[in-house]
Picture 1: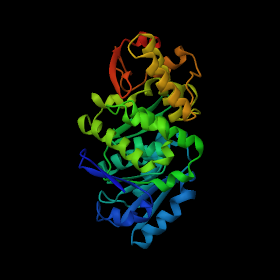
Picture 2 (picture 1 turned 120 degrees about the vertical axis):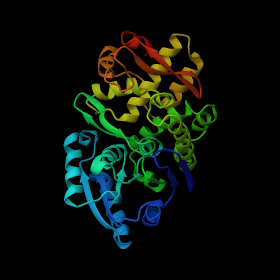
Picture 3 (picture 1 turned 180 degrees about the vertical axis):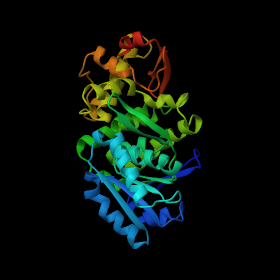
Picture 4 (picture 1 turned 135 degrees about the vertical axis):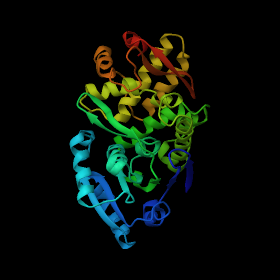
Length: 347
């Protein structure tokens, strides 16, 4: 097992290893004395792990309320969020009673936002079951729901009390979900400060070294979060590929999943930056080839103008500027401030 300490919020540990869900009751007792909790999941994950987790908690003496919603980005909205809050209130949860988010990024974002806002904040435990959530959304405290015109437009920064990542859950991931997680891992390879992680991803598939790779990615994210918890400076680097990616997601009506969209965004920005002479063309080709090697798309499925229109709601933007993340070399990127009208020149 790998343990990564994050010094943000009240401070918390990210535990990464095989079989950790079986240890959940003991781990939970380390961060809360309450025996009443809300277990949140979606209908896909619940069928795989929900009943087993609830049974283990019940056996350990926890009074476990449950809320299960339809899987998919379409459920990450104000209506489902409101229904979860109503369920928490009906169950008479107090400010001492934790919310457990069992699932991928949608579950973590939605349950996290509910935990952040119910009675002005209750303890949150993230239990990521997808590779993407394990390396990205479960760590760092970003919680949100979507609005019809934009992704993650309503949310809060709210750090969890604990993250428990059981790598055994990755065995049940569909291949597309594995690939989505690998897109974010490739992103970390471009942000790690050296070429080491990137070269590891070239040499051997992620699935051969889950614990080590997830641990490395979480440690990289930890460093950015501790430096810039509220995403006003260096933490923006974690959005490599995301401005174009969010535009692609929105254009598709969220039919294109987040990981694929980020992969497209990274490839597009790499090519655009290389055209401008700011990123070595051979390195850009290496990045695109690595993305392809993991079965991920690299070509724009919509016009630049359509993507740019949707990208205008990106939260890194101000009224007169956009902030995009551009690669300088393998392992190093920087924040570039541009006029919105120039955006299509960069991808």
